[in-house]
Length: 222
Image 1 (cartoon, rainbow, N blue to C red):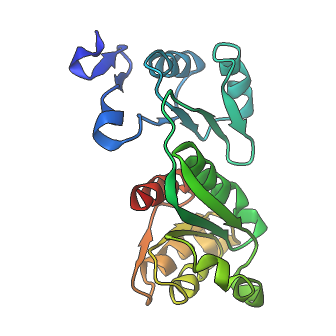
Image 2 (cartoon, one colour):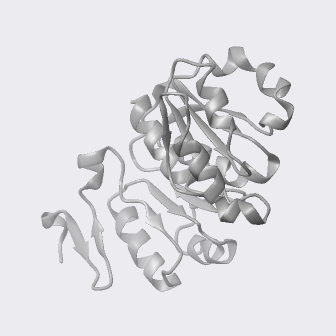
Image 3 (spheres, rainbow, N blue to C red):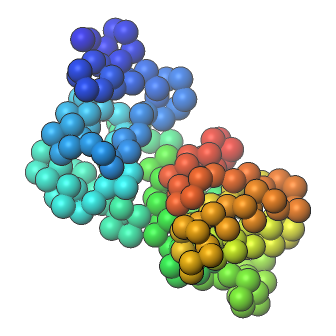
């Protein structure tokens, strides 16, 4: 089916070719649960229309396969994210800060930062500044106060988002991660802490959803 309806019907998927016009960014491909052939065909439709390509939770083996078909496709190994810029490049002027509590949280922080980059944002990264050594964060307060929006990525008990929010005037997007010991419950403890933040101005995305945080931050930054 042609693109006049705003989507391309591949049978197993209806690729939303109109999303860039509606939302400002094309449909993003979540890779788990899809075959290589499905990913190839969905990606191909977006590439045909010269739209930006973003594939989340993409493993390296599948990236290597897709790159033989889309030679310009790039890969962030830490973020498990494949990407290809579209025909139009925009640059949002505001600064977005991406902060991780621990080194174990960096892969999710990188997913957020890489998403922000593909969507045309000016991004700064501040990693391993969690509450167990709060002086590391306080040393960078001047930097984070320059941001228009901040993404805070934290596992364990997830307290860093509230701390950062209490220091700045801009919105904070909190990302709970599955990093932590048994009673962390795969990120649930961090999620509940962030949802119960006593600092106003904190929005929370799903566990390990760096992409969702990056996308939301980009909307705010526009």
